[in-house]
Amino acid sequence: MVQENIEQVRKEIVDFAISNEQTLEQFRIRFLGSKGIVKDLFGELKTVPNEEKRAVGQLLNELRQLAEEKLATAKESLENQQSNASDVDVTRPGEPIPFGSRHPLSLVRSEIIAIFERIGYTVSEGPEIEDDWHNFSALNFPPEHPARDMQDTFFIEKGEREIALRTHTSSVQVRVMESSKPPIRTISPGRVYRNEAISARAHCFFHQIEGLYIDKNVSFADLKQTLDYFAKSLFGEKARIRLRPSYFPFTEPSAEVDVSCTICNAKGCNVCKYTGWLEILGCGMVDPNVLAASGIDPEEYTGFAFGMGIERIAQLKFKVNDLRLYSENDVRFLKQFDGVNF
Ligand code: PHE
Image 1: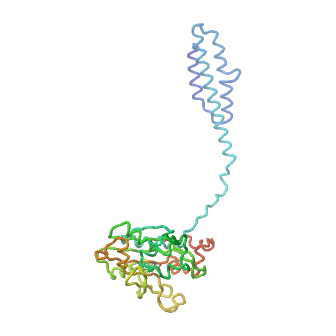
Image 2: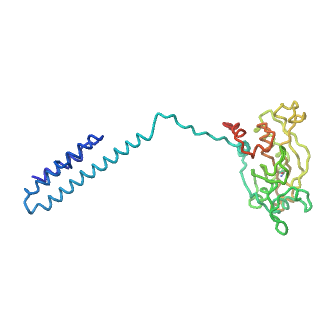
Image 3: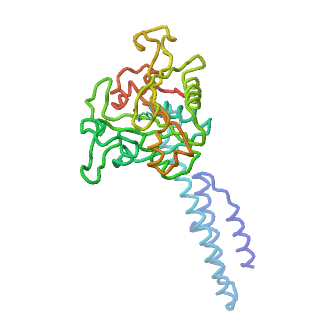
């Protein structure tokens, strides 16, 4: 019976293992060659009764198609294997992917953020292009204050609506106070701009981190304690701080904060100019005018604020003595922070 033969050959085709060029050729000759099985079966078609010819012919066509498809797929996958094998030399040494390093300012910013997050501070940000209200007026700068002067500030628009590059991150304080209710505990890292000639000790842009704490009964003692915790976390348990009276329009009273020199252990060296102290930040109690300007009742709430330069802290941690290095992208400088992690 031809039908039975067809079924048997079908199984044989399916089971035939093609693993290399020889077996591929054997398969072709056995099933599809000019003296192959499929051709033989077609020859037997004449012995099939007329009424079955059509159905058997159909089965034979399907059989031939099955064999042809198997041959084509096997051929293609063998060719692929070969081209892979010849293109890739698995014995060649790999090409190392060089790792970058984190920028020192990013390292210091992350560490400072982590220190304040541990005591419940959130991180907030504001725009670098700022209006007069958020950068100056709401912060109690009188209209004729020298900090508003053309020499310090990069103005974008003058006149009715004054738009400038922010000169400090204190602008974010105002934005946070306007948009949230006390208690507020937040730090605001960001880039600031001042119109200064670029030198080793001054730059037209740099980075600050602002801190703001507003609640009922916040006192100057809370400020001192917070800064003491911060200095010890950043510079080590031996670090001490001292506060010197100072002036900022937006805080009253105001202070500048020094940390005991981490380089000479407060013994006196050229970095601390033989005083044993290094200035690291400005701070004070938020002026009642500033609270009121941002919609917080100064009779109910008090708070403190502080602001520091990230470059300054990085300078102390890494002994970088030229501000220009931070923005020149010299890989010889950047590579020195490879693997540094806090
Ligand atoms: N904004 C001040 C500066 O840029 C720093 C500061 C922030 C001082 C908050 C007091 C309170 O110098």
